[in-house]
Length: 332
Ligand code: MRU
Image 1: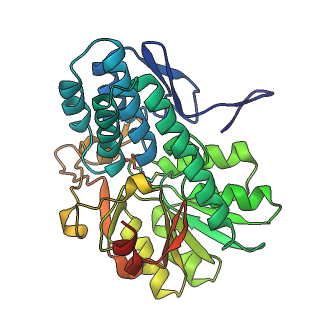
Image 2 (image 1 turned 60 degrees about the vertical axis):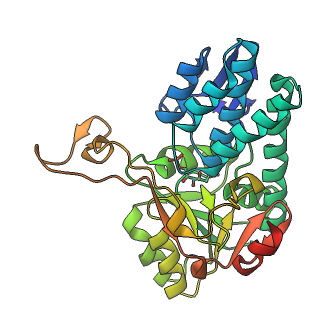
Image 3 (image 1 turned 180 degrees about the horizontal axis):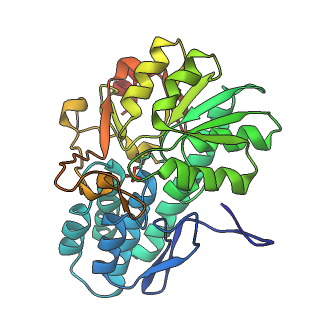
């Protein structure tokens, strides 16, 4: 992804593997500060996933794969490493898929440094293909609404929901992106806006509760979001607030697309009721930046994801093309 600092523009991935360490762009600090975080131990790697130094389903899947490689390289027990990584965040299926792929590779006697790098390259290739397929649905002049950050930071490069936007923009289509701010962690305002700015893609950050207003005024032509876990029924979990955007889109006759690679499809979970939803610290709701916005003693609840029923999904954008929810069962 393009990273601009001062007059310099660099092209770097969101995370990568180096001998005996995993390196991440520290997403907690963006957009104010660009800094790298190095995990040299499994404990530091687990911290990076849990505390969202790295976040976004495919990116934490790759972090999990790199973590398993670090475990092998440093002589740690792979079973224990898998357990530690699986315990970091419960919702994104990619995390479990990344661990599973590496356990399989290890059982075949493979070097996990190579296997995890190949895993990461596959994700990037799949995201690019999602972009190529998805961009066909974007016409010049379109307004596209997205939620959270489903860009390069969330996937190593290209993104899922942002990939079609990037491909369409690179092809010269004129488009405008409505970026939901995405409380409480502000992934839209902080990260999606930063990525779009680096790519030179016109956009505006909107308050989470403004989406209906722009939809009703016919300024949004399509919605594209990512996913953390997609069940066989087509119900899917994504960042909290996705569900209400999907309902609003249906009410306003706006197509609603979900972009995700194969690693996000969970063939063992039948429908949305089986998807575990992460509850995060109530402090994420109490605080905006460092300022407490709620009265002392007030309670806050902080589910990090919600489940959108399949009936709200126009189609999934995958590396193989468009997939209507009713066809998932045949493809898995
Ligand atoms: O809590 P986060 O920031 O990890 O949640 C991320 C999302 O919900 C993304 O929309 C999802 O992982 C898709 S990323 C390509």
